[in-house]
Image 1: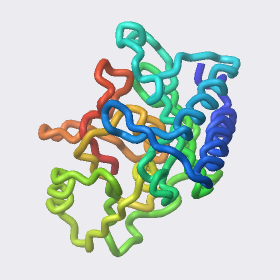
Image 2 (image 1 turned 120 degrees about the vertical axis):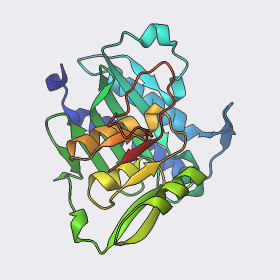
Image 3 (image 1 turned 30 degrees about the vertical axis):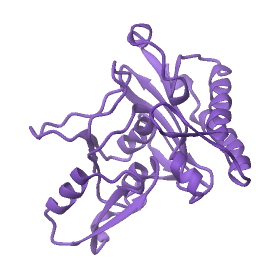
Amino acid sequence: MLEQINIQDIVKIAKEAGKSIMQIYNQNFDVEYKKDKSPLTYADKQSNDIIEKGLNDLPIKFPILSEEGRDILYQDRKNWDYLWIVDPLDGTKEFIKKNGEFTVNIALIHKNTPVLGVVLAPALNICYWAKKGGGAFKNGRQLPLNSVGRRDTYKIVTSRSHMSNDTKAFIDAIDTKKRKETVPIGSSLKICLVAEGEADIYPRLGPTMEWDTCAAHAIANESGKVLEKHLKSNTNEELVYNKKDLLNHWFIVK
């Protein structure tokens, strides 16, 4: 089934959504707030409509779980073998701040595991993509691009808008002979920086949702990195998707 999907078709859909986002980004726009107090803009809605139409127009059709359509009951989706998980605008806070650090995330999940992912940062002209068994890429260049061993610093990616005290404590406890360097950035770009070798680790000891991570998770996997739950038992368990509760466990990317 996966081999019948041309990942460049998914890249094209993401870029169409990104183009619509940038049209709104470059003008004044209104901000609404959802029940959980998170911001929502017309750009989120328009991007979601473009992505859903694009995915539904593909020859092979799978159900879609989107941040903007999150209310699908678990009993209706629990037996889905394949599904798309979409965040039409990841990093809405960064979009509102107009710092460019927001993304379009599209992932294909097979039996709770991400097998394809596209992460587009339209304001930065950056697109990452990966398909299981086919490698991971940034603007056409295969990942990883950089060797972490060549740096003089131990580079730690952190959230620009959601830094937690637990994450700070984790960073303080990292044992390394190198000088620690923290790099705050928005959206799923954090995972992608580790995937391309630009950073050593991304600890997220705070809440995220499945659509925040699954596309970049596929990219990290194909670049040879791991995205694992942060567990006291030190067992190696990757995040899984299409759970009853769509909230992710705390995790580490390295």
